[in-house]
Amino acid sequence: MIKTDILIIGAGPTGLFTVFEAGLLKLKCHLIDALPQAGGQCSELYPKKPIYDIPGFPEVLAGDLVDNLMEQIKPFQPGFTLGERAEDIEKLEDGTFIVTTNKGTKHHANAVAIAGGLGSFEPRKPVIDGLAAFEDHGVAYMIKDPEVYRDKRVVIAGGGDSALDWSIFLANVAQEVTLVHRRAEFRGALDSVEKVQDLVTQDKINLITPAEVTDIKGNGKVESVTITVHDETKRFQEIECDAFIPLFGLSPKLGPIANWGLEIEKNAIKVDNTLDYQTNISGIYAIGDVNTYPGKLKLILCGFHEATLMCQSVYKRMNPNKKYVLKYTTVGGIDGFDGSRKEAEKAVIKKIDA
Image (cartoon, rainbow, N blue to C red; front, side):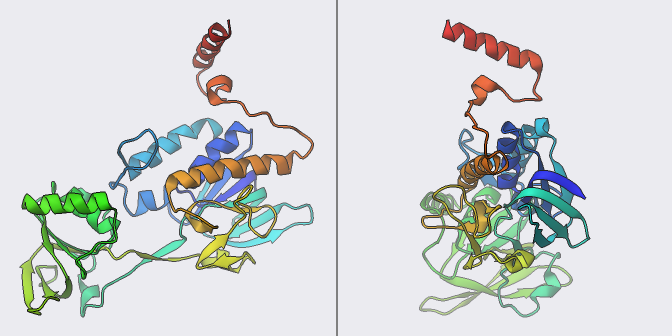
């Protein structure tokens, strides 16, 4: 039996940052994740994808963000159960919880924080005959390492942020990038749309809209795709390529968590955002992309904020008769860091006070 103060289900950025905020409150954390490594989508789906909306980082690769978070939580020595899925939960009479994984590992915690992102994912695949035969042979539904496409001819399909961002990124990596979208308008960020248009003007991206890839040809690997152009000509265009990457998003599933008696709305867990992001079951919280409430924004930085308030609530839950006085890290420091650094910080503070 693994015992902890907060059991975090999901080791993505929000789950990892929870360890930091809990550590400041002297609360111990343990994380469960079905993936074999920490980092969630950032590690598994797009470690080399640049992220632009993390405060203090004009640009940071998803994998580097995970590395930084892991470094940040080192002083608090969290535990990890990786490669296992949280399967069952039992609330005991004293208000604590037993969570059992699909491999039978049991965890006993005072509170449970569900930080599972959007859950488990299945890529949304285009309806193309013979598509499965080319999977891992030129067809991919996500990009883990863009270097795989260096000096290759790449066709990307999609109109969202992933399709736009990767087209922009691969324009400086691949030999040729073709972006195909079934509509002339895009769903992604306006800034990304403008960047794509600039690269089209510079002949670094070949943009074909409104159109869709309707056939794939090749002998054991992708050698070309057929594009049906949906304009007044209704023409067909064959493009030789080495890779076809349809980026139509991922279909999320909550998995076993959906059977825990939580209030679910559109595949997300409803929480009370007026206080602490607690679910309809006292002691179970949901933070990050997995939750929903009025005005919810699915951003990593919002998950960080939710984790901070959630940890404060858990502290009060575990210490109902103890008053917590917030101390800034610039004043209180972080236990586990180099002692000389903390002494230097105290000296600076004394000087300021004087």
